[in-house]
Image (cartoon, rainbow, N blue to C red; front, side, top):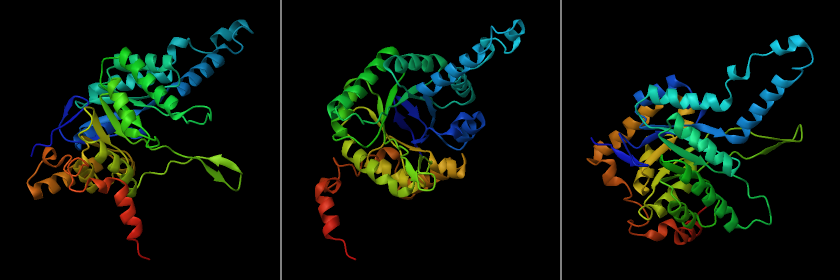
Length: 329
């Protein structure tokens, strides 16, 4: 069966992608993911401010007391012998490209326009097959309008698009007033694809210490519904690729995302729970579902998108009304 799918201009052997997670920093895991069927991998994000803070701390450590005593010059090895976080990440990209034959997508989370540009260039030079822009900043400034927030996203993409030639995907949150309009603006600014949606980790309150604390809850199958709806609404209305993300635990979620129009389906939490071999479980489950119906991904992709279902209102307000009125205790 032909499972070939296209994403960001790549011809992938199937629609399954291992999305960004710490699992993907290990070359052994990347090889295992490829062996078990992953058609592409996304490396964890490189965070500009984190890298620059680490490098500042290193320079401060190396400079502390360096002129206090004659022998102090021998306290630390030369700076050139240290590998910064940037160098380590870039080396990982290069090593990953040599280790596997599938596309290796680098993820970037910048903090300034110069940072987005400079780091994107470094990622391309290191051999990244494509770059995923993991754009997020909390719109906590009460004087900043929704339009200004969207303008910032578009400006970041335009700056990166002008700096690199590799394909660019933009990973977005679902917290926009008009996601479709923003995606059209980003597509016009040079986006080759979109990852829907980013899953942000929110703070909680520790009542014992009265401090904010963060944890990393893995996604659950029920979280599929927001991206499922929006991919179904957007499918067929954009030239850019659509990658589904969040809630993919079994092959059922993979099939559902393809039915509403996703070009590829990404998973992280399931792989963290079960290991790289779970990619084979997802692939075998997808293949079994398709085999039982004598179809391939191309034949089901978008069959249940808003543009093709008999009742397009099922994606929008009419369905909301029916659900509320039809509930029985």
